[in-house]
Image (cartoon, rainbow, N blue to C red):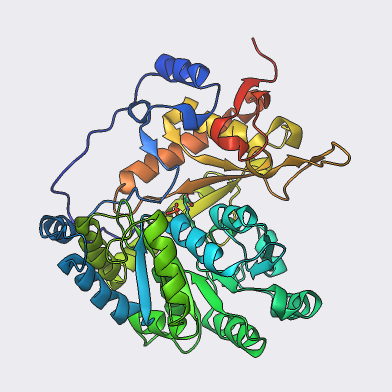
Length: 461
Ligand code: F0G
């Protein structure tokens, strides 16, 4: 049996969940056009669609909410958050935003001009979207190991410094308004980036006069991986490691819905005194006054408390241990997964689990549908439906390298028995895998297909 770290909390408020019967699940699937995004929350037993905004807040966060100061400007809540921001991130300025993509939008609005390019290890899709929406081009320069599901590289989120240097030389620093890195690398399986690599990325950007911004959504999980895996960091606290990470950058965007364990919130932080003026003006136009940025005062207080809780050593070892437990359990029942497991999620390798379903019949999608059909579990396909597209010139379908299904773990929400149930469901699916068939579109939008596409089984009965 893999080791399950006992939860460093006990439960004092519960939210009922229910496994509806098989027939009702089948009906729900048909109504939703075999798209789990179309299901109602009450039709789901265990929801692993995302770890974003789905965490459970603590008693201290709920108490802080009651102290929220809703003054339009200069609220106490803002100053309490500012104090925590200083302690962890240490940037000279910050503005709250309603979530991560709002911070990305403002950063692109103030820095990016049409035709410019923005490198990262891998951009998350909202970052990519915000760069493209301003006429820019996102560029992903992660190390090759990131695409090898069996590579046990401890920092598979690292940027390839050779590729980055060549990219800057070929593109010209004047065409790169800022550079980024995502910690942990969500689009690449929630894999961490090493301190050594962040240092090298920082130096490379600095040598070319390119401002360096960190996508910090899961920075605490990344800092914990550094503490556990990188020589020289074992005796440092996660907070000290976080301090060191952010001292290497010129700014950061963050969706607080991840490692700050709140249901809504984010920020944009930076050091440049000129830039913050443009940022504040853009914020006022789109989000709100700079001391609340589109959030209620109480949200700022919940974020201030959550940011510190997200760095707690007991919490992090439980959190990362829970993900590792799920990964090990899945491997034991014969499910192929991306190795090593990341921080916030386990990714199943659908082409290996359902080898008889060809890519054009969406094996990842079929597995995600089956997770719901078999066990009322919701997870998300990250394969051909999400990332495949038609080549505009040839009309040919371009397939992604991997057909994945992401099981994202909300923070402090599910227990060991929920995970054991999930592992059992996967085991049952594997036993009858030959009967599982692929899907085809009945409707597909051009972009971000997975959210709204509709499907039917390839051989409809
Ligand atoms: N950056 C990363 C690395 C993310 O994972 C996300 C969101 C964002 C930015 C955008 O933040 O949702 O607050 O606007 N990821 C979620 C997920 C949606 O399910 O992985 P947001």
